[in-house]
Length: 200
Image 1 (cartoon, helix red, strand yellow):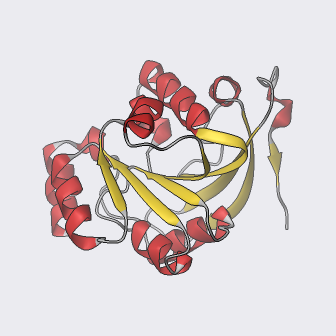
Image 2: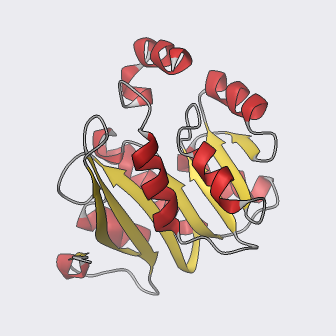
């Protein structure tokens, strides 16, 4: 928590939140991944590991966990804390290149802790495309947002070639958060009509 606060004070826009995500949100995010043994799960923007802790705990060593983090202080912390996860230092906007350099192709699962809606639009577009390029056909990407609307606006989802639906609302987080699941589609989506909400 102290490390998170120091990094936020140094660069609030880079960290994106004033406190790590709650345990309730972390568990809900990991549950939404629907992990299967033998898969590779990529976590983008793990920070201090609020989601990573529950991701590693849930997979019981049966899932390859790869963390992408650009903040060097967080990178060092993650490498010390999660010895059974692979930590790659780099910017998620260069995701395909980072993965290729580490012998990793497209992945079936992506967990994103990035504050997408607070990232400047040009950078957000590049990031969305990178995430879409890294996700394999039929793969699943889980993202949260503090706003009621989708974390990936229609134009960004189309660029990433993903379809999204809201699957959960977590009130016990500061601030409360919505969880969205995105699936990779074969062709770019032409309209906003793909946005669906789950009422289960």
